[in-house]
Image (tube, rainbow, N blue to C red; front, side):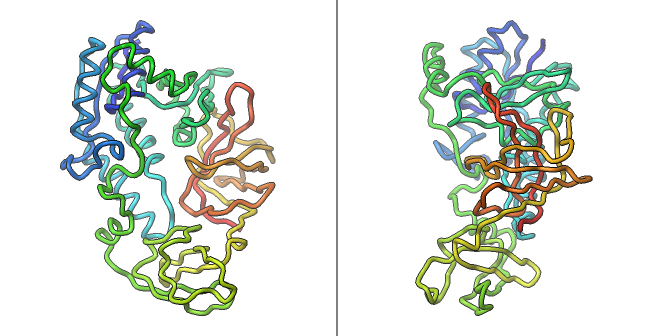
Length: 362
């Protein structure tokens, strides 16, 4: 096959490209330039897709002996990822930009261009396993639970998964680093990137305020209705947040307060106790079924609502274009805008049943 290897400049994508070469594919490496001003993206261990990363990717491609290109996706990244991120926060929701980037950039924009140029598949360094069952793709957790990235890939369509290759799905990160060193790849010990690449100093609140300005509102006790303080915009908060609330006086019981809900129209941020955060029911919309098999009636599963969060047993049911998820035990910090991913436990990696965007909770 003709395979386009997405090379971010990190160790994972470099080894994934190397394994694609070893598998006998005709491989071409490509690095995505995601900012017209690369200096605005994070660097070092807190960044990805920077100038230094493009150099690391090129050096890896040279060692592998494959052609290498840089494609400019800066405008698309701004529109699809950054502007969506800002808009979601303005609406009182909590988005995951990595999910959006995988969905809209790496497996829509990139894959579309690859297909137009005659490639058969795109290979990435994601930690997830992919199989074909009854002619349909089946996305599973990786062997390395600590690095599993099936959550951020669960919004991909069946057609996108048919043209995806995840060479690292059966490996542990320690094995990948050792392999990179054995191959002479300079990125063997390069730190992993994390956090949000387009917020250079990591201050999400300041970044959003620079985009949206200030929209003052009140911090309100959800139980008593008492005004506890003022804020400069609901975009500075997320459900479950405890620190940095700016509450002027401690609660009567002396216990910490958490953000329970955001009301962008009125500018109200409601806060309450940790017990008030518990969610028993999740209503989600825009479902995607990677294996082309929507839920058929109430289905036992486990649900994950954050990329690095744990799972909770649940019963999920598809109702029209929505999914209703009843949790077996309360889950805290569930925010509209997050993605709920449904899994069926399996000995060889939990299977992704589907994903949907959280619209509300109860």
